[in-house]
Length: 111
Image (cartoon, rainbow, N blue to C red; front, side):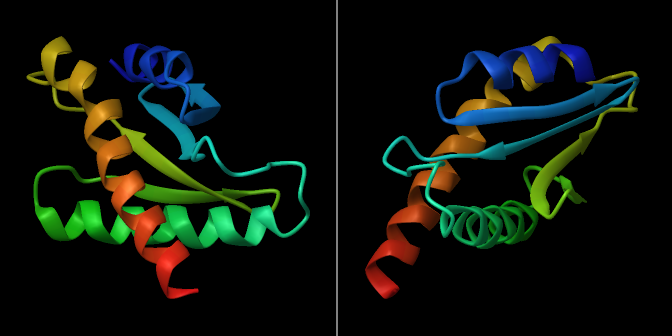
C-alpha cells in the first residue's frame, strides 16, 4: 500500500515524491505557484509541510509523521495495518492537497 500511495503522490502535480521502501513513503506538498529554484523556497516549503502535518494530525482523520532528508522536511506515511484499503490510499493525496492549499493560503496572507 505504501507503493500505491507513493505512485498516487508522484502522479499528483502538487507533490514531490522523495522515497518509498517497504511500508514507508515520503513526500512533500509543493504548491504550483512556488518556484522551487528560488533559494528561499526550501525554508518556506519546510514550514508549509510542517504546518500541513500539524493540521492533518489535529484533524484525527489522517496520521502521518515526518522525516528530514538533506534539510528537506518531508511528510512520511507508514502503512502497516493490513486492513488499509486501496480506496483509503487513493483519497489521501487529494485530502493532503486540500489541507496544503488551505495552509499555503494562510501562510501567504500572514507573511
